[in-house]
Image 1 (tube, one colour):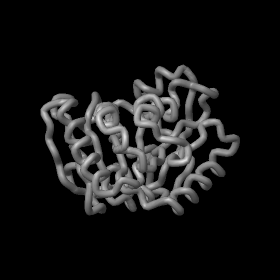
Image 2 (cartoon, rainbow, N blue to C red):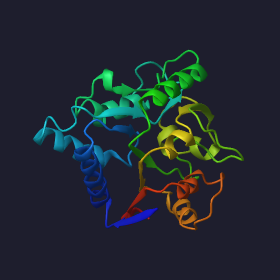
Image 3 (cartoon, rainbow, N blue to C red):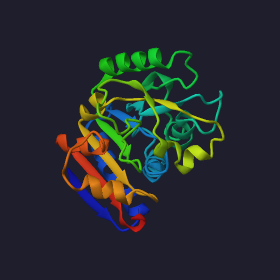
Length: 236
C-alpha cells in the first residue's frame, strides 16, 4: 500500500489522473471500475479535460460500475448511474457496448448482481478500481461485518452509511445496495483509494494501523500488492 499525501483536493485529483492516464497509455482497452460520489469527481473532471484535448484517448477503455442503490425511483438523480454518467461516461463518450452496470430498476437485485458478476468474470479482471472510503471504513457497499462476500451481492446498509449526508438528501428510506464484492475488488490490478471529505479521518487512522479486520473493510486492501492511497490532507 503506497500513500500519496497531497496538499488539497485538486492535488489529490491530479495525482489520481496521472496514474490513470499512464495506465491507459500502456493498455488502451483496460477495464476501469468507476465509482460515484465526490471523492473521484476531480479525477473525472481531469479525464474529461484529457478527452477534449485527445478525443481518441478513451475510445477503447471499458468500464464497470462499482455499486448502486436499491429502491430509488426511475430516473433518480441520486442514483450512482446518474452520477457516473454525468461526471464521466457521457463526458468521455463511453458507449453501452463498453460499459457494465447494475440496473437500479432491476426487479430482482440478487439476480442482477449475479448477472453483473457473470459479466465481470468474462471481461475481467479489473485493471483500475476507483474507491473511496466510508466513515465506517466500508469500500463500495461492502459494509463492516463478521464475514465478507466475494462476489457481487445485495448489501444491507449500516446505520452509519444510512446517516451519511448523501443518503439523507435522497428523501427516500434506503436499506440496500448492489455492489461488487471483495473478490472483484482485490482481483484488480491496481486500486486507487481516495481519502477526502468530512468524517473520514477516523477510518483513515484505522486503515493506517496495518491491522486487517472485516470490521474495517478497507483494511483488507493491505492484502493487495498495488494499492495507491491518495490523501487530501486539507480535509483531515
